[in-house]
Structure formats: C-alpha cells, structure tokens
Image (cartoon, rainbow, N blue to C red; front, side, top):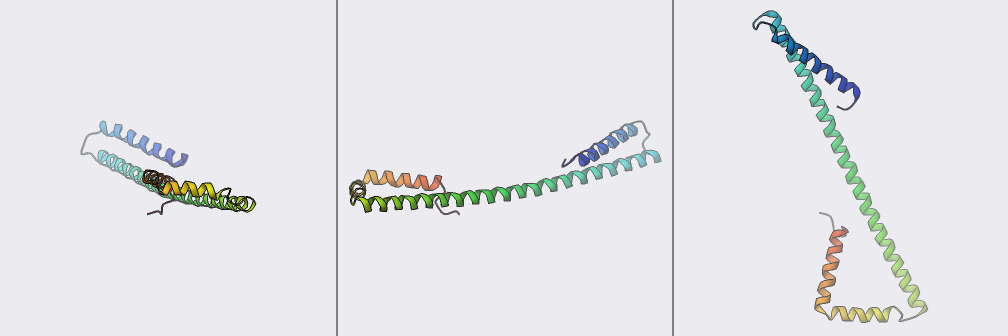
Length: 145
C-alpha cells in the first residue's frame, strides 16, 4: 500500500471480512440475517477490490514517472558524453596545432607514416574498422533509432 492510512484501511476491511466469514459459518442459509451478513461481506469485498485497483493505478503512474525520469537522465548522460568527447577532441586539435607550431613535422611525420601503413594493410584496416564499429556501438556514438 502507498501509505500507513491505506494499509490500515486495508487491514480493517480484511478484519471485517474475516469476522463476517466466521459469522456466516454459524448462521443458517436462507435466513434474513444470513442474507444481510452476506451482502455486507460483499460490500467489504467490493471496497477491498476498489482499494486494490486504486493502489495498482497509483503504482502504474509511479512506474511511468520513474521511466520518464530514467529516460531523461539517460539523455542527459548522453549529452554529457558528447560534450566530453567534443572537449577531448578540441584539446587534441589544440595540442596538435601547438606542437606543430613549435616543432613542425614532430607529430605529422609519424602520423603520416602510421596512416600510410594502416591504409596499405587490409588486415589492419579491417581491425581498425571493427574497433571503430565496436566503440561506436558501445559508447552510443551511433545515431539513436
């Protein structure tokens, strides 16, 4: 149940039903007292069912709210990851420009040699492609569906 008051109401209804159930066992079927007790017991059952349905509705609403909160949180994390990746890329470019400005060819010469080797080697090119695809899937860099 959602709170203590609802739990107390639920327990009270169950106690009434239990008491009336015991009372019905000692009554003769077909009497007016039996019919009244049975009708009262049915009313308690209907109230109990209504309370359970309200509880279910409340819990379903809370579930939808929790799902919405989780979705919003995941979207925020995705945006933060993208911002971090952009910041890292910007820092890498800045570092590259500063190093190349101070020592021309210090970074570009080895990078060009590695790139020539990688693009002239089909197995290495396939490995790099597989790694890139794995990272794009794992880090959700691929567009969302």
